Length: 446
Image (cartoon, rainbow, N blue to C red; front, side):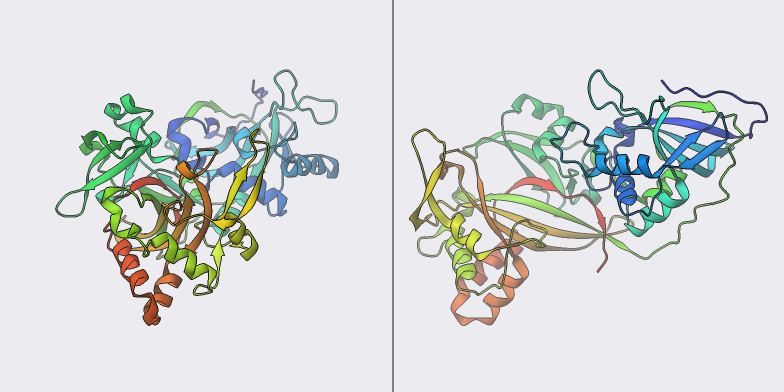
């Protein structure tokens, strides 16, 4: 439990607000990409944020000693398999040292993270003394680092239907996210596919649950309560604005000086980007144009990559990590597993185009600060081995290609008319696909 000694000569209006980042209202500070503890740990690693030992009773806020800092950095950098690895998800409880005036924050001084328990029965100690806080950081340094990293606070009411155009799943599986908001779909928890239907104006209207055999199990009209605009702030701006739910608030009586620093957000004309991924089964009746004999889209993609029509193949849909030619070629080879499933050998044969029949289409959405869509373009195409062709019965990634690079090369070549036609069908959304997930929202830096 937090233990603070109350001392005379209190500074009026200063409080400690206890926050559990695991609470639903606080999840925008605890998202996968935009994680407040994650940013702070990264800032400590880069030495742009200093960890402090804060003691309100004794008027002390001292930087970590070299030994304490070395220990903290060891835990931050430790492998996830090590017992004392410190992950951002472990720092879900903190106290915000804040000055309030008429209920609104005028200044934030320290963010104090609660003591971390690395095992069920032992608390990590520093030296020989118990510490109320695991470590603290000054908001001045944190705010500067968050601004530098373009850290965002993105608020949704459940899945975000941004101007009725998009379901924002925060990187989670779409079915689990949507079914948690639409109770009718919870009955079909084993159904793995979710698809969105559009109305005559192209706006999201209904959501459907589909079986493995692509049969519609249930279709539900989305409630009006989901048709809301999201809200996007910079993360330090959201902290100063008190856009979190505090489980406790205690008047703080201490002689520890307040910071003079006041955060001021400089307005930027900016836009935001979300990557939305849809999964296409090319053998779906609605996608038969993509799997015509001798003109399969999967075969054309393999040909484009293997013959150098495109310069690079990628490991993810971010198109940052390049996949080596050797790895690409190895993934195309049929794997022959031994009878015990302990390993496999590669045959001389490649998988057939009909076996490479799962395609992930990642779209790049750009929206303005009001949530209006500026543009929507295909960004990456991921080629996957169908689960039916895998002894492990799982869809297996072969590699990702840049849609724009494919399109431009096909457009420039007279010999790639079929590929160009199929790519234009994808861009026109002339396919049947299932919503997989969307990325976190990021600030557009282009």
